Length: 276
Image 1 (cartoon, one colour):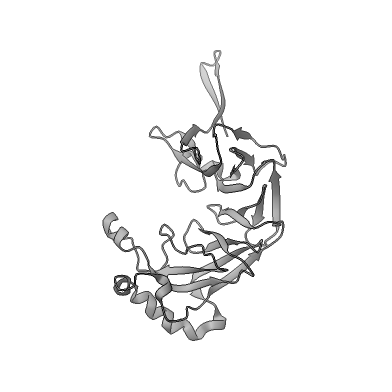
Image 2: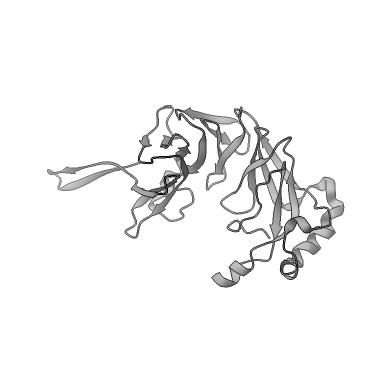
């Protein structure tokens, strides 16, 4: 199996990526899991037309992954299934999976494998709306929406039909990271924020977008960073407050609460808080 929390598959400077196999991690301690990081390549994500693959992301359930390439397309894959057109490799790949743990200690580099790797199963191609190489993408927690960036434009695409749902723009630099806020925080107060999208850009800003609205104006612009923002995510504080977490080339990680405004109703003796 492929564990979604492990660094597999990896982006590649070529127009394909590798998937790495190992056994299940559920019964391993943290230290044991670290020593069992997959390092034997068992399949290739091969199908992008030209240039390198810039980014690879797994779906929340870890069963599928998406890749963004220099060919201005996003591809959806099942990395644990082999393309039926190459069924002759099934036995070889199955053997590689079962012997991965023994081979890990003997193989130092995945590229050292002498056997040709079979291609993983391609499922869908997403090209509509992408006019620049893809450097940022993610899939929401329900695996229904593909969020991707084409230079300075953010796109939401139906994962099943491959039709563009919405577009947003406003950044002055290339978008380097995208996120569905709350989508990866199971059981958190931020889970309702799956329809709030975030884009982090080289223009040193993070912009929040409401997928439930037809407005093209951002909900909020975070302008604290002094240089390019490289990552944006959501999380919870020790008190359970929903947070937006960002990192920047300026060397700082910033944490902000999911609160847009608050007021106190003296008549009802109530604190009113507006969360994004």
